[in-house]
Amino acid sequence: MSWYNKRLAKSIWVYHMSASPCNNCDIEILDLLTPKYDIERFGIKLVGSVRHADVILLSGVINQKVAPQVKKIYEQAAKPCFVVGVGTCPASGCCFKDSYNTVEKREDVIPIHLYIPGCPPKPEAMIEGIVKLVGVLNA
Image (cartoon, rainbow, N blue to C red; front, side, top):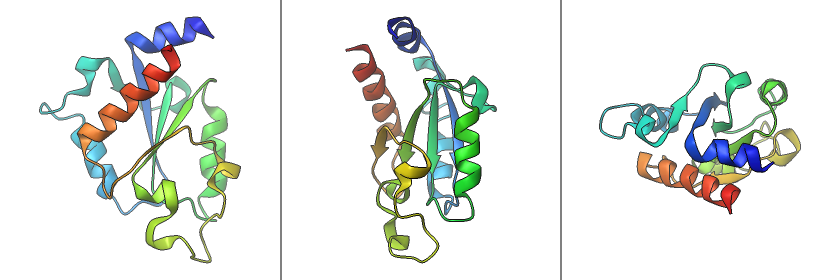
């Protein structure tokens, strides 16, 4: 897998997957594309198809209704594909933690490799999280 790690060191293609979010994290993810943060200067590119993605940015709570779609989309991704949970919702469920509709074990639906905390996390935190993921992969 070293050839894959060398490729990730130069360019990361990211797919944004929304699993019933409140849209605060989505707005911050879109901020990454603005000239202020310009993530493409780091070689990070947002792609429109999960089949081209190296990393999936997951935002929102995985509930019973979207769990099959999230799993289906993840299975379509080229492997290895790493999942980054953006915000408090993928990490802990936030205020929906004990709700009847949320999935108890998110890892049963989709493996999440990295969590970026915050409600919503700032673009700087998302960039730092993805850079740390690349650092772990290249170590």
